[in-house]
Length: 351
Image (tube, rainbow, N blue to C red):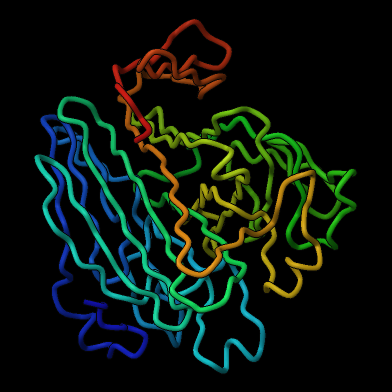
C-alpha cells in the first residue's frame, strides 16, 4: 500500500509526538523518524551524545527532524515549473511517511512512495549486535512508464552540542569545486580537499572557525571506498561514514554558523551527484572530473546502494583521522600525526 503523502501535512500534526523506529544493539541505539525517514539519533547507550542533531526550522516551512536525511529524487534546486507542480527542494523523501516492519533483532525494513517522482523506496537498516555500527541498504524503483534521470544523496548533518569549534572533519576526497562559483571546466578543479575558497583565499574545511559562508563544496573520491569522519576530542566521540564510490562518487561538504559565528551545522553529504542544479543543467553537463552528475532509471528498474555509519569513543587530544582501512571485516582508523588507531570488528558491510 502506498504511503500517505505528507507534502501538505499541517503544522499541528508535526507538533505532535513523532513516530520513530528504534533499533538497539548491546552498545548503541538508533532512532529513525517515520515522518520523513530521517535518522535522527545514533549514540552509545552509555554516552548520551547524539551527533546527528539538526532540524529544519526555516521561516515559512514546517519543522522537520532532518539530521541524516535522504535527498531523492534530486539534490538541491528544482526548476520553476517543477516547483509550481509541487516538487520540493531535495525531493520528496523527507515529506512522506515511511512504513516500518521489524526484520530481526536490531533491524527494520522501511518503505515509502514518492508520489510526484513516482518512485518506490525500500530501506533495510540494522544495528550491529556488539558494535556502534549501523548498516543501511536502500533500493529505488522507477514506477513511471518512461525512463528518467534522478539523484540520490545521503545528507548526514552534525550539530550542537556535539558540534562546536573544536570538531575536526576528515575524508579521503580529492578534487572539487565551490558551488557558489561558476561551474569549472571538468579538467580543472578549483579546490582540493580539505581546501575551499572564501573571497579568493583558502579555507581549511577540516575545521569550522571564522567562516560564516553557508556554502557547499563538492569533491570526488578516487578510492574504491569513500569515507568521512567528524570528531570532537573534548567530548570523546567520533562519527564516520563509509560507502562504495561506484555507488556514491561524490562528497559534498556544507556548513553553517549563527550570527555570532558559532557552528550550527556541518553536512557530510555523499551521493550520486556533486552539482546542486536542476536536471536540465545536470543533463547538459553530463560529467564533472570524469564522474557523472546524475543517474538514470528505466521503467520498473531498481537501483540499490549501501553505506555504514560508525561511532568510536576517542582518547583526549585525538587529532582526527589520517586514513581508514576496511579489510577482512576489520574497520581501522589511523590518527592524523600520531600512532594511535581505532578499530572494530565490523563484519560484512555490504549485502
